[in-house]
Image 1 (tube, helix red, strand yellow):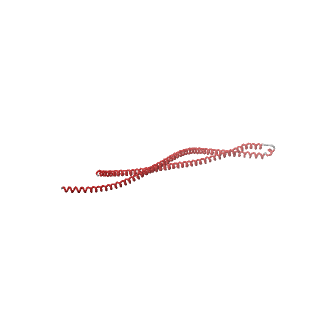
Image 2: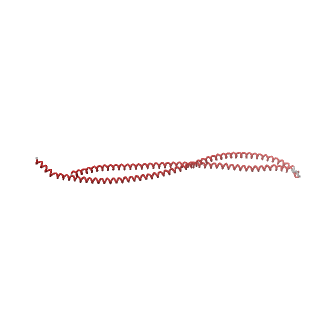
Image 3: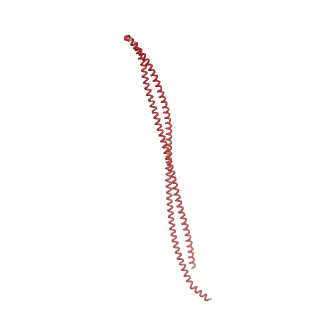
Length: 322
């Protein structure tokens, strides 16, 4: 029994240094492996730091790009405001032009009303002149008929008186030569009768010429009035057509401008909405990527710290044990 214990003691005494040496070698190998792993983790950590810096640079670049897009949006908004201001100015100018056109239309309506009044007055005056002309012609015809009747009666009386005087002169030719002047007195009486009649005829002819001239002047005035009425009607028709065309052109221009402004506003709103949505989507994607990378790095750091803490604890225990 004692021999067995001695044998075991001798074996343990000689085998213990070998075991300790082998354990130390194993621990050194483990330490080298851990150092290698630590170096690898350190390199990975450097890579992650580099990746983080790259991501930060990308984020700063994206932020700068977003800022540029925001500035461009501001510039677009300023340009849009200017265009809106120009559109408002143009609409105000068109409103002023419309007011002026309305005034012109009112003036045209007033001129049209005055032209209608003038046409009515000229037509009434023309009708009156026609009535006066017809009355003058009728009076002239009546006067002409009366003059012809009086002249024919007078000629008949003169012819009868002349025949009787001719017979008496043939019978009493010699007494007449001896100083009887009865026939001469008859001729004088005839001359006294004819002179006023001839003067009346001359006056009547002169009055007839005057009446003809007046009638001709009245006819000319009527013709001029008719021509003036036709001219006024033509001018009135042209003014109506011109005013209608100008009103249609103005209405069409205002409709085109309103449609153009509406289209510009809709396009600008769509463009701004699309840019804002794209910017928000990109910012959200970048924020999600940054959050994922930060979570991953945090987990990796926690895991490496935990492993490094365990490794340090083992090394401390090993040093304390030896």
